[in-house]
Structure formats: structure tokens, C-alpha cells
Image (cartoon, rainbow, N blue to C red):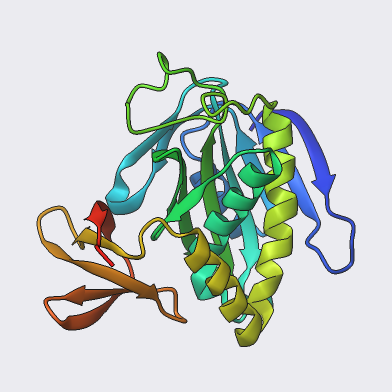
Length: 255
């Protein structure tokens, strides 16, 4: 493992102390950190790369971060310290939105694991459990242009008018995430954070198509996010809870 530089963030006794490792090109920061967790790395270890060439999203889809254009980072979060850890993917989304707002932009969360700016995807999230840790992966598009981003459904901070170095993105996100995961220490506080997530959501109130796998889909109206972080959908009058799935926004529902 090669390292550009390491850093320690967060010295407050109430916030995590992140130990940040900047590494060179990697197949996957989640896979790299998962290996470190199995080898006994300390909680709050963070692995960051400017180039990820074999990352995974939902349903094992590939996630590629071209050289120098995005940041891919993974954090080791000790599950035992956060009884409400089950909504971690939603917390990460809230933290990315807060980070973008602090940089002068606007963003929304798209249930369950994406963040959008100007109607286009800027960040994706993947959480995996390894031993007694949650390995929390997030990718953020930083400096791509309209010509280099590759697809017209994605956007970068630079394309949104936010020109910042990669180090500032990592530091800004980790400081915000360190504050937000504190809400997972109690049920009442977690419910408060879910209220924030609902306010940030671009999914609620829309007709959505949900794919549980590559073939089967269900269409309905997204009504709410319940206390477990599940999406509540009205499917022809039957309200159903979805713990996961690929969601496609169809249209807003007339009020």
C-alpha cells in the first residue's frame, strides 16, 4: 500500500478521531479497508484514494473513479458504539448534503444511497459489515468536467460551480460525518436525523419504480421513510416497506 500522506482529524472528545490514509490507485477502498479491519486496524481508520478502478455499488455493479477526478473513501465505524447503526447509509447521505451546502451548493438525497445535485448524481454510498465494524464507503465526484464525466446523469462539484481541492472535500465530509453519526447513539436522536433526511429527500412524494433485483420491479408512490430507514411505498393502496432496492423517479405526484 502506498501513501501520499496520512492525517488525523477530530480531536474533540465527543467526535471520532479519524486516522486518514491516502493511498495510490486501488481496486476498491472498501476492499482495502475491509482487509485492514480483518487484520485488526483501529476504529475510525479511513482509506482515501483519488483513483478507484474496481469499486462496487449495489448488486455488485462497478464504480470507477478516474485518476484525480473524484475521491473514494472508506471509514471503519465500530458498530457497538452506535446502537442505531442500521441507518448508516442514510446518515452518510445527510453528511454529503451538509458538506455540499457548507461549500455553497445545494443537494438532495435519493433513497437509499445516492446524493444528487441539480438533478444529477454526485455521490454514491455503500456500507458493508466486516467483523465488528461497518465499512462505510462513499465516492464523491470532485473535478470532472462535462466532457470528462462520461454520462449525462452525473455531475461533479466543479460542474456545480464548487472548485475545491480533494483534501478539502475529505476533511469537510469527515468533520460533518463525525458530527452526524453521533445521532446513532440513541433512538430519539436517530429519529431526529431521519427527520432531516426526509427534508432532504428527492424521493418522497414521487411515483417511483423499485427494482429489488435486475429483473423484477414494483411501481408506487413514495410516502415516507420509517424509523428503520425503510422506504414506505403505496402500491395500489397497499403500503409496503422496502429495506433496499434501486429506485427510479418517475414523476412528482399531484397534491
